[in-house]
Every structure is written in C-alpha cells, then in structure tokens.
Length: 189
Image 1: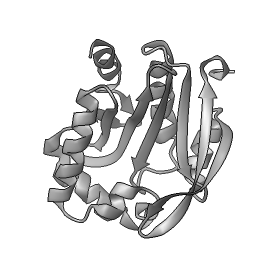
Image 2: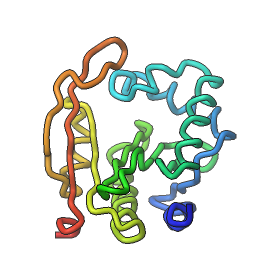
Image 3: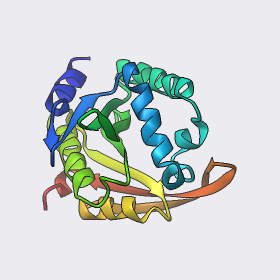
Image 4: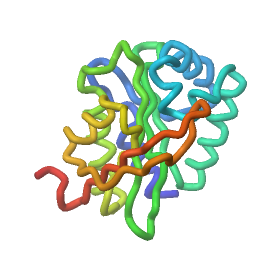
C-alpha cells in the first residue's frame, strides 16, 4: 500500500521527549507483554486485548493479527521506546477509506503518562491522516470513565459525538464507550 508507506515513513523514528516511535514487529512481543504486565491494573478494564493477554505467546498472537491488518491497509501500528524499554503503543486502529475517517488509539505506560507525549504523537497521527491520507475525520473512542483519554481527545479539539451504552464487554463487564470526532476543517482552529 503506497499511501500507507508514506504514513509510516513519516512517523517511524519520530522522537518526542527522548522517546522514539518504531514500527510494531513480532520481535517486540516480550517487551510489549512486559508493558502490559506493568500496567495491567490500569488497562485491564478498558482495553479488551489487555484483559485477554496473559502470556508472551498470546502477545505474539495479538501482534500477528494486528500486523495482518496493517498489511491489508486496515491499521497502522507503532510502539514507543525509552531506550530498550517499551513505553507505549499508538495506532490507527481502523480506517474507513470510502467515508474518509480513521480511529486512533493509544496505550502508554504509567511512568510516561501525563507528560504530553500522547497528545504530541496523536497530533502527528492526525496531521498525517488529514494531509497524507486525505481523511476527512479522525475518531477517538474510549470508556466513559477513562478521564485521561477523554482529556487527550478534548485537548486536541475533538467533539463528543455520542455515548454508546453497554457497547462492549471487557473482563466480563459491559462498558460504555464515548465516541469523539474531529473533522479535517476543524483541525488547527
């Protein structure tokens, strides 16, 4: 996918506050699983794959599935590194090319949270979606009690477009999801 390659080249190697973005790869399963384990309490009730991933082998399966989605152009996946330690995971989770929208997502370790890192990376993801991929809308979805994610969406200018009640299950619990949208013409205002 040529347009996907342009996107990935722009972000791979990006440095923010001493951390570096890399393409997700299967070789990262161990450090990715370590990041999940370190932050399981924070994410197990909000991110479905976290609650379902309990071994490095399961992490490899998650990565393999996601890399297949990336290969088909459905997703774009990045890991954030602090030296040899994985600090976060950033992605374009889903793309609807005909309608021109894409959903972005993120997970950052507690050690790096609250430092503006996620906002900076999401800013770059959004810029590339709007300028390189000609998307018309960016979307962020999060649990209705995920105050950090709600804050990121609002600080980037996203508008709350809806609350989806009892929308999905994580750890056997029905969860509500907030749907935030940002139109291309609203970006940078």
